[in-house]
Length: 99
Image 1 (tube, rainbow, N blue to C red):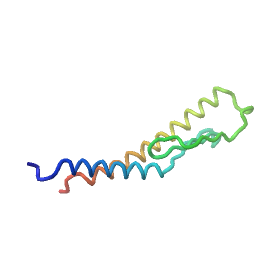
Image 2: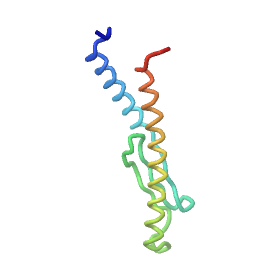
Image 3: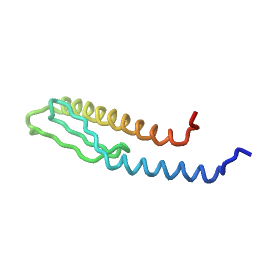
Image 4: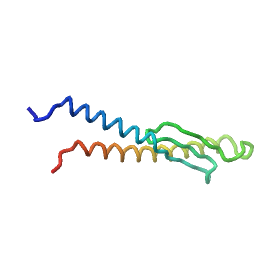
């Protein structure tokens, strides 16, 4: 009726999605705060990769540390979300009709 096989299209979309996820898993984004005191790394799929604390715990109080971790995590998530949206948009464009 539509001139294409819906099952084949669905399979192609799934494959493209898996390829995008693999690409995103290989890209690392970083969120930092406190002038580099806190560093959090995520991959493009928003999976946690690492956490670095570049100061002694004796030099920072609990509330400040919590704030710095929150800021670094938000920055890393913002970057991962941006990267993820860009990759998924590129992938989706392959399935839109060309005019």
